[in-house]
Length: 166
Ligand code: HEC
Image (cartoon, rainbow, N blue to C red; front, top):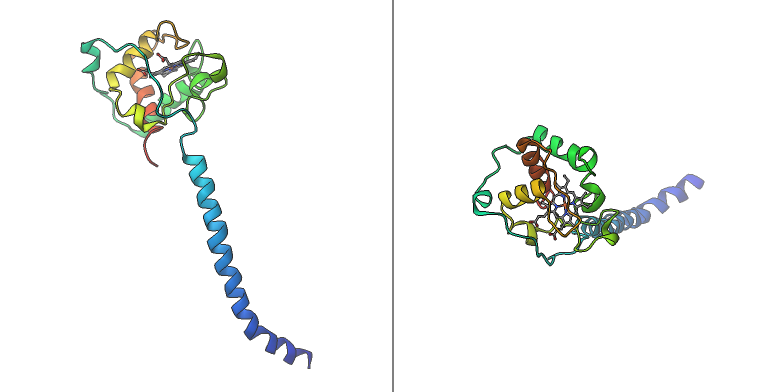
């Protein structure tokens, strides 16, 4: 008797289960999509007001001679996140490159937001190279003149990866 009730109960319940499944796929799905969107959207200021000096012509013409291999990007990442002196780029530019590092509130003008496609697409490799080597006088951006050219190019490969769609 108990078994029969159970059997009768199931067919109707299947629809209910399908309903639950559809709802749980649709709603958490869209909630996840929203969350993902929020996480992926550039959190920093974008587009960013930018008054940085323009590099001399011979720098502006430079193209990154290194390829975006995983090794080169990793070397750039290590410098950015940990090794660069006087301080790792992360302190100002943020772990995710959005310009919201821990010093964000303390400095003016604000650190560049490398996730901002709008800003980054207009900046030639040579401009980034020149600023990293020389710093941006009158701002918190220090000069990293001790770095080998190749290290600067590796950093740039890593910086560019922040504004590429994954
Ligand atoms: C103490 C804070 C600080 C650190 C550390 C720092 N930056 Fe910056 N950076 C800034 C600020 C502030 C600006 C904006 C300068 C300006 O508006 O001219 C900037 C701008 C830049 C720019 C933009 C150049 C342009 O033409 O727009 C690049 C590229 C850059 N930084 C790379 C780096 C790299 C690579 C490192 C680490 C090796 C680094 N920064 C470390 C503060 C910092």
